[in-house]
Length: 130
Image (cartoon, rainbow, N blue to C red):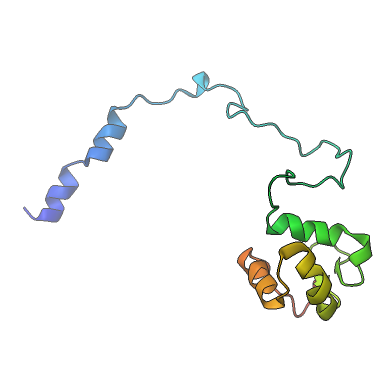
């Protein structure tokens, strides 16, 4: 008998362990949310300008980017596009000189773009979303 045939005939330890455990009875499962989740997606934010991160922690990149895009006084530099699915840097030089140092502690557009790419954003060069 070949080694492959022996392996097929002999159940692995993991398979034996799974077979020996009790099966789960769907009628005995606690009703959701059994994982202690609170859905807050439909709650109204009474103060949308309150920082999303606690004051003792440095906010992460996405929170900083959202704060930048939410500021009306920066719309001539960076803004959401009308459909709301993407954003655009209108004035890259001004963005690099004034916005990046204020929020990120450096003034490198290349570093900012690396972070943008690292978070999975894609550059739109054609189509309706550009």
